[in-house]
Length: 540
Image (cartoon, rainbow, N blue to C red):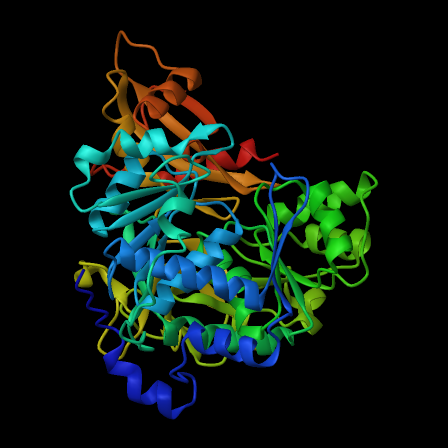
């Protein structure tokens, strides 16, 4: 694969001069750990199907990473090739990420919720050479799914099955003892390190390219803002195939030479127990995780005094939840806002969380600039809502094969697609989205793609999907549908149809409202704002 991260070069000199890009890779921090603390716990991995967690020191993790890197080279993976995996929060996820960095391949984690429709596009578009999946996870057979797609994946050379048996098992292919040492070009700080797909409004996911400099510059600022050190123990319960999980919960502990504790299936009571047992001090996820921890504690789960800070991103945090977490867990929940394209752009400092997190989404981390403009690109004064633009150290390298969608101007400002305003202290508040995406529990729902699919149903004359508030998930989705004469349509039929078309369950609207017609302007343009107002009445 030939990558062209065109957004790197124009800001390289300025970022290096300012000290934000340190020209390091994750390999440097592994070397540091092996020199200074080889026996320090690196990963503690809890699996729902295992009685005890697997514990790996930095020395033990390094040995596994070396074996996997040699295994990938033996499969023909080289510098710049894409390695995809659809794994939960297992230790192999972190080891694969490090192995790719060690031999110069591009890591492409994919959310385990995706099925044939999404997975085929991602593997094909990224020209993935190798795909690693679990044999089974949550009762689903991933090996059978990918095998059923192989004839339509011309670039895919190898399927590796974790937990499988025979020649294509993870152990047989990537943990072999007979592979020779390899020499590979060093991973350069501006090489593409990570390829993540993000849902957009174009009907297809976009491949976000990140380098070591874009990722690590953000991590350094984030770590400093929270005062994290090697002594911290970080809970990785949010999916690591999102940038939040990959950057702050998988790579962050390694940069610190600290400890990552992984939970593969979210279970809040168990989470409280391992927070206590492992001495967890910090975590990051969307607001439903916080609400669930509060409920589990109120039901008698243990509360641990060392669990001090939680960074909450993905959707605005209800002020009542911030206060509830403080009261029930003695936990400071601070707001943050970011995107796959630029990581955590803003955070609310822990010392000001009770003051600011309920009303803002934080202020920019060092190296990041924000600007709110009107439709003509003119800066707006404090308190006025407009288009939110971002530029700085953690901005991505561009969209894979689609530089025309990069949405940056000549001065490097990236149009986030969000509407926002700034307060007098430069704290930002996201105040709507110009791009048509619903964020359900931190997961972006590609509205246009689901609408386009529903339009193909024989009973659907017109459809519009909008979000409505939900106390736990932030938002849920409602489909407003006008049905063709002589046809019928139901929530059950909609769900059946979407499943038949291999749409992941998390993208299915939770509610259906049938209408004679959908509201439109005189020119025929759909008035979604009126549907959003109607949908607010569904809030729980």
